[in-house]
Image (tube, rainbow, N blue to C red; front, side):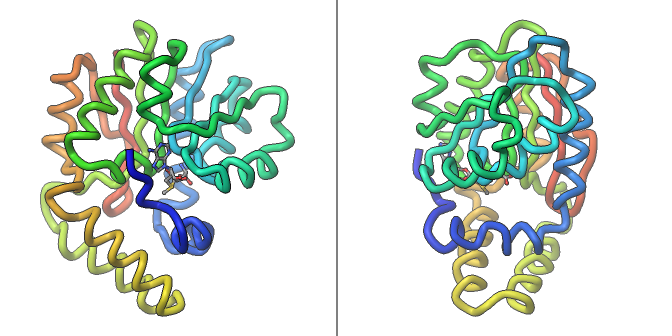
Length: 223
Ligand SMILES: C[S@@+](CC[C@H](N)C(=O)[O-])C[C@H]1O[C@@H](n2cnc3c(N)ncnc32)[C@H](O)[C@@H]1O
């Protein structure tokens, strides 16, 4: 599935993260939720692991073994350096997330942070079905992502794009704003109610948003 978070967005990932209101708060909340779900010996998969910012709080807060998967070799190399203190508990996989899931071991917890919103709607459906299939019974899918609330979508998008305009160089602002506008289009946007409904239809028995900052949520779906 196409990687839309490449080139200047990948190169400026830390600058983008520094302007996202969910960072570091929702990373911390996600790790605490995973700590509650985690049982000794559980295997955790981070889909679209980037530079390791999403996996680091999990590694700090649990003794879980974490598989970090990303399609970008550049991201994988940076995350290996950033997480070198956890070498014994990390495995790095450079592959497309969907291809990996078609022939992967079963996991107790599959985690994604700001990756799934990058896929077109039909690809999201395929990806979430594959995630469900790759979870052990009783397992959990933990979503940290941009899931728009029922009202105020345009205001929230404009507020975030205004931050990029004010505080990043024009070349980066242009690229990340174009990406955000595409993310908010019908072809990509994740809306709270339909997304939760779809997760239930896919087989998850309980689906709960445990926290939200502006457009971003921590959501737990139990198999
Ligand atoms: C916005 S970044 C999020 C990184 C990290 N999870 C975080 O929260 O900091 C999205 C990541 O998804 C990766 N990605 C995009 N398409 C992918 C695909 N088809 N399979 C696996 N990873 C993909 C990108 O390379 C990028 O590292």
